Amino acid sequence: MRRLNLIIYILFVFAYLICIPYESSAQQEKVLKIGVASMITPVDAVKYYQEIIDYIGEQIKQPVQMIHRRTYDEMDTMLERGEVKVAFICSAPYVKNREKFGIELLVAPSVNGKATYHSYIIVHKDSPIQSFPELKGKFFAFTDPKSNTGKLYPTYLLKTMGTTPEKFFKKIMYSYSHNKSVEFVAKKIVDGAAVESIVYEYMLKKNSPYAKQTKVIKRSQPYGIPPVVVTNDIDAGLKKKIKEVLLNMHKTEKGRAILRAMMIDGFVEIQDSAYNSIREMEKSVKNNETAVRKTNGRKVVLFGVIPRDNPRILYEKYQPLLDYLSEETPYSYELVIKKNYEETVEALGHGEIEVALLGPLTYLEAKARYGAICILKPRGIDGNASYKSVIIKRKDSNIKSTDELRGKSMAFSASKSTSGNLMPRYMLANSGIHLNELSNYANFDYHDSVVKAVLKGQYDAGAVRDSVARKYIKLGLHVIAESPEIPTGPLVVGPGTPFSIIENIKRALLDLNPNNPRHQKILKRLDDDFRNGFIEALDKDYADIRAKINAVPQTCGKGCHPKIKL
Image (cartoon, rainbow, N blue to C red; front, side):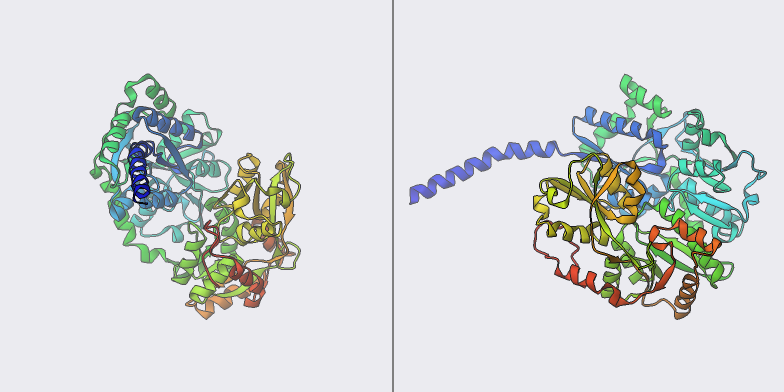
C-alpha cells in the first residue's frame, strides 16, 4: 500500500512539473483585447483600426483582438472592469476615466503635424444660418452624451451665452456617430450638429456626399486629440512594447501604409496637461447642471426605456413621444438610456429615472426589488395587448423546427429579455433541448444584433420578439417557432414618482388615438406594439411570466438564467 501511495505521489509531482512550462506558455499566448469606440473614427475607417491592432499583434508577437463598441459608456465600462487593457477613446472620456479609475495616457495620433482637434458646428450648405446663435429654436444633433466635440463644447458654448441646450434648442437628439450627425444635417433631418473635425475633414477628403451638403459655421479652440490609453494595471513590459510599436509605426512600410489610409501622420507622446481645457469646460458645465434640469421653469421628468435597440434608434423612436408629452402635460421630458436592462431597473429604483417603459420580466424585477408600479401598457399590434417570442433562422437553412436545434448554435437577446431569452428557453425545453445540447450560444444586447448574427450565418438560429423579426423577413429571415402570447411590457413608475406626474402622463397617453393623423405619426415611429395606443395595466397581467421565472432552475451551472426570484 505504501509503495502504491509513493508511486501516486511521484506521478503527481511529475505531472505538476511538466505542466509548469505549459501554463507559462498559455499565459504568454493570452489574447490582448484592444478597444475602439466607434464615434472616434469614420465608419469606413474602422477596418484601419483593425489593421493597426493586427500590426501591434505582429510586432509584439502576441494574439490580439479588436473590441468595437458603439457608445463611449460601453467602452468606459470595459476599461474600468479590465475587460480591455488598451483602447482608442475620445478626449472627454479620458478626462473622466482618469479621475474615476486612473486610466493612463499611452500615445496620441498626430494629424497635419499637430496632436489637437476641434469641434465643428455645421448646418446644411443651403441654410441661411451663418452663426451659432442663429440656431436658437432649431433641431440640433449631439453625438454622444460623453463626447467632447459632439456634446461638451456646444453645451459649454451655450453656458457662456447664459443658457442650456434644453432652453436654447427646440429639440435635441443623439446620433451616436459623427458620421450620422453629418448625414442628418445633409438630409435636413436636423438643422445643425456638433461634430469632430478629424472625422469631418476625413469625410470631405473621401468625397462624402453628405459632408459636401454641409458647411461649418463655427470652430472651437484646439483640444488634446483623442488618445490611446491603457489601464493602470497593465503589465509594464507589455505597455512599453505597445508604446514603442505605435511611436515607430511610421518607420515601417506596412505601418506607413496604414497611417496614410487613415490620414494621420503617426503616433506621438502627449502630456496629460493637453486635456486641461476640457477639464475646465467640464467644471463650468457641471456648475450649471441645476439649470440643465429645468426647461423654461418646468420640471424635467426623466423617462427611461430598456435598450432593446442601439441608443441612436431608441432616440429616433421615442423622442416624438416625449415631445408629445411635453406639449400635453405641464412637464418637459428627457430620455434616459442605460447600458443594459439591469441598469435601467436600478435607475428606476434609485430615482435616476421616474418613468420607464420596461419588458414584462424587467417590470417584475423592478416591482420585487423597489416596489415599482405598472400604470399602462401598449395595446399591441392586434389590439389585444400582447406580442410573441419567435425563433428564427436563415431562409436557406434546412432547419424546420425547434426539434432540429439540438447540436446547433443559437443567439439570444439580453438575459433579462422576456421574448429574447426567457420564453425561447421554454420553447427549447418543450422540444427537450437544454443549453448543454446546443453546440454554442450567446446573448446579445440588442434584438437587431441577434437577427444580423443569424443572417450572417454566425448562428444557426436566434430568438427575438416578433415585431423585430417582421422587419427582416424580406432579407431572408424565416420564423420556425413562436411562443404563446406574452403581455406587452408596461409603462412603470418608481415608488417616489409624484402622483401629479403619473396622472398627467396617464391622461396624455390614454388620449393617443391611432385614428388621429397627428397621433398616428407619433405612434408609427414606435414599435408595432404601440401602433394602437395604450390601455390600463395591472400587476396580475404578468402573473404567468412571474410563475415562469420563479420556476426556472438556478443550478444548471451554465449561468444562463436571470438570478432573480419574483
